[in-house]
Amino acid sequence: MPGTRILVVDETGDDVQAIEDLLRDERYTFFQVRQVDAVMKEALRVLPDLIILDADTVQDQCDRLCREIKSHPKTQRIPILAVAPQTVEKNVLLHWLEVGAEEYVTKPFHFHELRTRVRALVRLKRQMDELEDLKLHFEDLSLHDALTGLFNRRYFKKRMDSEIGRARRHQRDTAALMMDIDHFKLVNDRFGHPFGDCVLQELARVLSRNVRQSDLLARYGGEEFIVVLFETDQDGAITFAERIRQAVEHHLFRNGSREVGLTVSIGVSVLSGKSLVEYPELSWEDLVNKADEALYAAKAAGRNCVRLHDGDRVVAPEVTP
Image: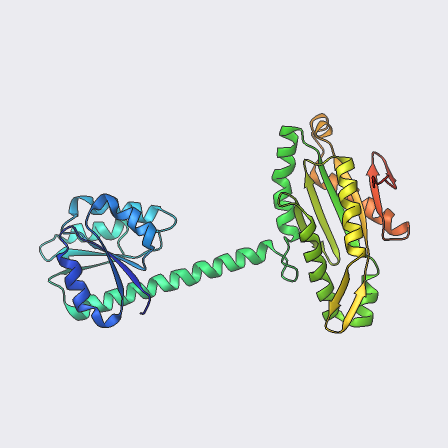
């Protein structure tokens, strides 16, 4: 397979030439390591699709090399083909398979056997890479909202479980902003759901441009979004919320020839580091629930505004110009 990289570990260099000659038509790219102590360094540099290990010349180190290759996260999926003399005992070959080698061949090489085993192991590596890519893809889908690309509610809950504990240990303020697109149903009714999806995607981009890298931004559900500001007090949260509200209000949401201006209502709540220590029963759910209550108050107040959950009441905050 073109582009396939094969790392040959051979202290003498004799096997490298023999293998290259036999597999010349396969168009593999070969790399050689003669010093056993340099194998892992070269494997990490090249990240080959196959490692051919001359177990005859490095027999004393074969066990250790196999274990090292299979224990490192960057090399553990690389198949190992052990090369052994015909005189080697069967139990030794089986031991190499137990410690990490996928296959073995004996010398002198038989062309068809060598080619078949190399092809099979290279194909195995490709399949393992595809499975890993698929695994990462599904992990990404499990953590991110498919429409907007933001973190989803599942990830948000998982992250907050640890973040609130960290805030309590270090007595740091944590703020939450719950926001909802005003009259979003009318947008869907007037322009259709595809345009509504574009609005949600564009709003996600607007929010992403305004949050810090350390903040947690997620789509909470439907047209609701949430931002958690770590190490942010009440004044900072209110200022940030007003900046977001204005950014959305002054933004035109476009899709083709269609464009519309929208607003958001925002509810803010803050858990101080002191209160987290004094009241250990407080959780991130309390933070979110209070922000949600403030959001409903913002809706009831006419929308396109910010409301703060301050103690046991919801108030219109004073925004510093």
